Length: 333
Image 1: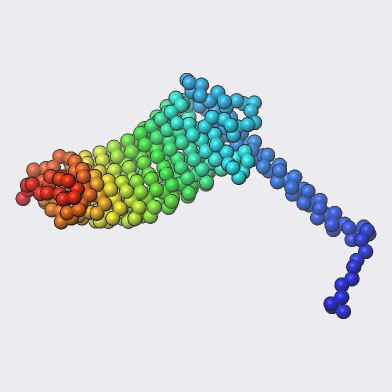
Image 2 (image 1 turned 45 degrees about the vertical axis):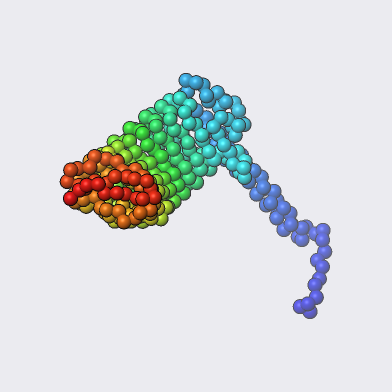
């Protein structure tokens, strides 16, 4: 009898009640989902209105940001998602003569992947609420008048690939927690008033391509692990107070094309690997405390095309000649 199926009569209250309950649940869930989407859309609208209240532009370039408009995806500088309707994914507000501050309510734009607001007159501090944006991949607030410290909450943005906060008036130390952002490819914190050391963890970022910490007041050694990334392209540490030697990982990097260490207090001997590199094109080492001689190059196909900096008399000299012939030694001990 286990193989026989019996049809139950339809039309009784007891048999139709479960079906009615299921249908009601589906309708309720659908209604709830629509309400959630509407609420999310309203959240983004309110966040943009809040942002406008804290920003001004002498050129009135935010004129499209009208308080009575629900079509905020068409506002200047605002990009919405193609897959999630009415969710803001990018703010592009470069060179709009913006004054004011970035308010905490920007943290409510939870779908943001890109913030690009360089070359304005923004003041105040970098709001810690940026750490709420766990989808954020790109952050550029460079060339403004931002002050205060770099918020440690940025380390919560684990998907960050590019951080450019250069040319502001920030001070304090580089948050060591930034090394948690393992996807970082470019980190520009140059032209600040930053103090303290370079966090050792930054050298361990396996996707790091560009590191620019120029013109600060950084002290201590260059992280020994810097150069571990096979993508490392440019390292600019000019105009600091760094000490210690050039790390061997950095000198032996097979991808490094630009290394600028001018105006520090670095010491020890210059690694010969720098002059035998198969990738290094620009090298700046002047105004440090190196000892010994500039190493001779055995790489006749060296790509090194630019060597700058004042060379102390106690060091040997080199002259750059066409790349196909490498470096030619013209003096020294």
